[in-house]
Length: 578
View 1 (tube, helix red, strand yellow):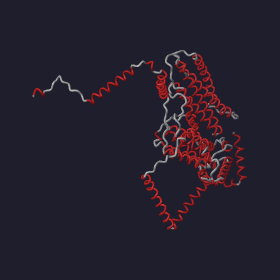
View 2 (cartoon, rainbow, N blue to C red):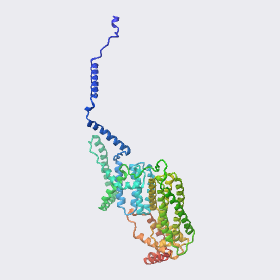
View 3 (cartoon, helix red, strand yellow):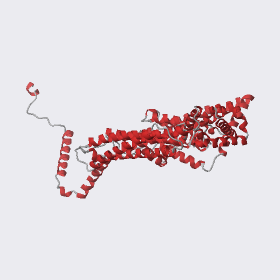
View 4 (tube, helix red, strand yellow):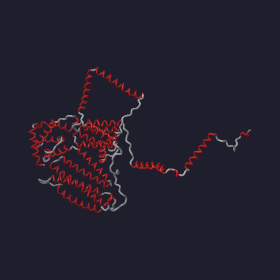
């Protein structure tokens, strides 16, 4: 019995019937797959094979394009974006279209950064956004103090720069102009993505949430109205406030113009396009600032021409500068000296020469010359000529100062100083390009930025105040020639502040003529008082107060005939120094 119970090693226990059937089915499937793969390849349709491979080729091509220029999905429409767009449009209508002066647009431009911050809470941390906002604050202050069309242009330009910074791009001039040109189209494209919310099945929870808001609001209105009717004083106050609000609404409705709707539509498109521009953002030229120099050295065919040109110009500039400084630097000019010819027209020609030298230097140091092994010789000649060009700039400043020293400062002479300074900055950028091997596109972008910053700076510069303060100081020192720029040149409100100091000057004709000019400006300000709040100007308000405090000094010139006679004598007297 014990032997019968021991296991027999040679005896194999068969597997269960279900497992055997599964194994047979698996073997059959493997044999069928093998037979399918063993079929001759000629039986497969070649066209079908090409069709199957075609999507792979197309997909590969799309992937290569995507690697070169990745597609950027548009941002989803959010509630904050709708709020920002509506706020932009409403404020543009209220503060620009309905504005009667520069204060309205100033408030609008001041509110642009907060509007952008609705979409970009960390806007100030964006690329150059802090700098752009700082410049915009200065321009807004200028518009409130004394606005101008140029200041409006500066503000618009800075808003475009802020939109570029908010979109993550560097605010450059050419790209900014391209973005501004297409912002209305971008706005239309973005607005096409807006849609009304779909109607969904209202659940019991949805009804409960609605009632949780509507019933308390209704209770507040009903019981609040009862309390108002029960208290005569409260009823009177609420009635007056509602009347005030209704009058504002009625006046707004009455002031609607046929051009207001097109303006609001344009503001909507522009605002949407600036806040949500289409991607990718515009970019002109290569992105790198470094000049890509081809490896290897090769003698340039331009080397002899450029070398001889620089040697010739060095000799010419050196000879001319010796003559310039010898004749115009520390010389006492005789009576009848042609100041306009030397200091005005001559300075313009020298400025043009400096700008031409800037272009020539940029042209010399191009790709073919940078590979020439003799480049250092040309570069040394360029440094010598650059030094002479800087001396030429000093000569231009000297000529302008000769003109200013003769009969004072004016707006055009201020523009002259800005112009020569801009040319010098452009020349310095060229020198930096040569020294650091920067690209041509880097130079173009740098010079355009310098030009735009010069325009913005001039738009906020208190030109008339600075010019008339200089002229008054010269007159008070005993040099009367700058009085001609007071007598015959137009003066803005801020320019009249320094003239208040001339009411005590020694020269009777200048003293009485200035008093007559002040009386004339006071009468003009009184006959055209500020109406709408958007007409407010800080310089006008301050000047009115200052004139009222000193009006006793020119009491007799409130008579028009006496005032006109004094001004005429002043102009005839001062014209001898024109």
